[in-house]
Picture 1 (spheres, rainbow, N blue to C red):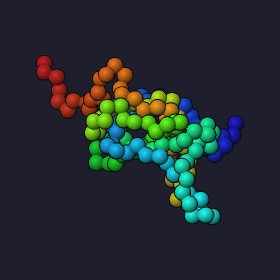
Picture 2: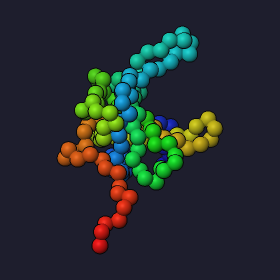
Picture 3: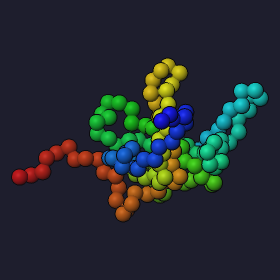
Picture 4: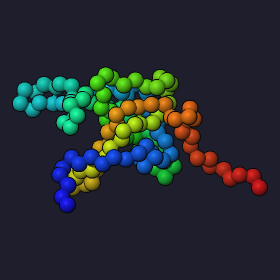
Length: 138
């Protein structure tokens, strides 16, 4: 079986962000395509669904990332611009309809692109809490 470039694999929020993620404030923006011939930018459209593409940045709360970059971009496919669930700075969020698209960069490194169909507050109203550093009392 051969996979064509741009193959999207369905994933869950728990697969990608098992410790949750927090939205970087004011980071939901419309993605732009650049036309090299004309030198113009235009609103990006998803090649598969035809929907508009928005991008946001989130902080991955994985404790194993200590000392490494936690910021990652997630593209949101929507007809209208998504908004942050509460508008609070660095609020915990979840994504629905997630897919991952692996690819190889021009430098030969493996990378991936994340897409979602919606951004929401965490289910059940609970915040994505960081794991406790201390031990439970005996």
